[in-house]
Length: 178
Ligand SMILES: Nc1ncnc2c1ncn2[C@@H]1O[C@H](COP(=O)(O)OP(=O)(O)O)[C@@H](O)[C@H]1O
Ligand SMILES: O=C(O)C1=C[C@@H](OP(=O)(O)O)[C@@H](O)[C@H](O)C1
Ligand SMILES: [Mg+2]
Image 1 (tube, rainbow, N blue to C red):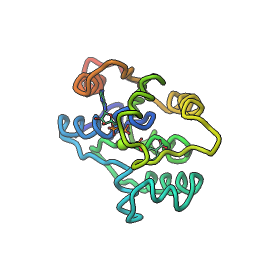
Image 2: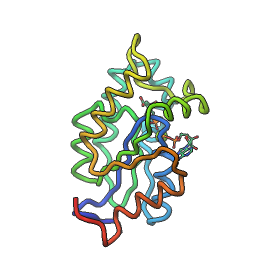
Image 3: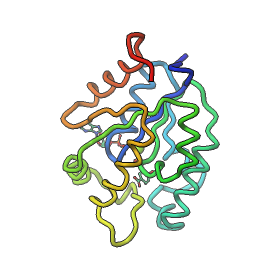
C-alpha cells in the first residue's frame, strides 16, 4: 500500500499533453496501485467525450463538473491523472492536497506546442476562453500548477520511462519528507 507523509495516493497535474495519463498508468502498474484518470471518470458520468461535454456546457460549467468528480473520489492506494484544467478549481485542488502527494509534470511551452502538433487536440478538448492563446493559457496555469505541487518534475527531453522512474524515486525511503 502506498503511503508517503501520511498521504495514500499520488496525483499528477500539468498542462494537457504533458503525459499525466500515460505516466500515471505506468506508475500505478509499477507500484501496484489503482489507476484513475479523472477524464475517463467524467466521460463515464456524462456519457460523452470530453470535447463534446466542453462544447455542450462551456468552460465554466465544465470546471464545476470536473471539480465535483474530483471531490467525490474515494480512494486509497490510487495514482490519479487529472485533466489539465483541474487546477482552475481551488476546491478540487485543496481536496486532492489532503489525500495525495501532488506531482507537477512540467513541460516547457515549446514542447507543449510540439506535443499539440502531434496529437489530435480537437478530439480531447481544452478549457480556454475565446480570444486567449495557448501561450496565455500556459502562463496562467503554470502559476497554479506550481502553487499546488508538492514536487515538480521537469519533463523536457525525458522519455516516458525516465519520468516514471524519477517520480517513483521521489517516494523511496531515502527521499526527504515534504
Ligand atoms: N515523455 C514523453 N515523451 C514523448 N511523448 C510523450 C511523453 N509523455 C507523453 N507523451 C505522449 O504525449 C501524448 C499526450 O500524453 P497524455 O498521457 O495523454 O498526456 P496528458 O494526460 O497529460 O494530457 C501521448 O501521445 C503520449 O504518448
Ligand atoms: O487542459 C484542459 O483544459 C483539459 C485537459 C484534458 O485532460 P488532459 O490534461 O489529460 O489532456 C481534459 O480534462 C479536458 O479536455 C480539458
Ligand atoms: Mg490525460
